[in-house]
Image 1: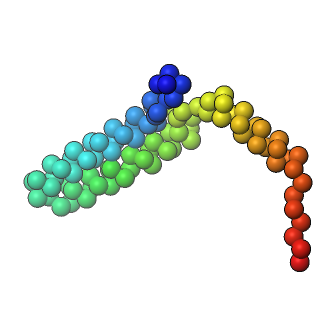
Image 2: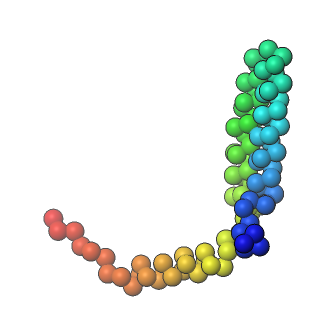
Image 3: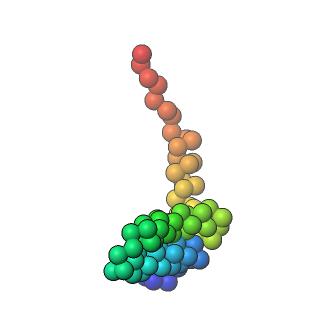
Length: 90
């Protein structure tokens, strides 16, 4: 099963998680040190992780769609084109 599912083993996913993890660790350190500015900057770093990961995914560093998914999308598009659309009775 693991061979057929990728579960985020991509540069985009790893980069986003690492950025968020560093922010989480820094926030913990600043919390213990009673440094509120550093804590909130670290919280911002945590929130930056998914943004960077999402941007990298858009740039093509994310998971590629599987052949099954592409076939299902193609079949759904063909079925939608073939089915007559209901008309609205006004």
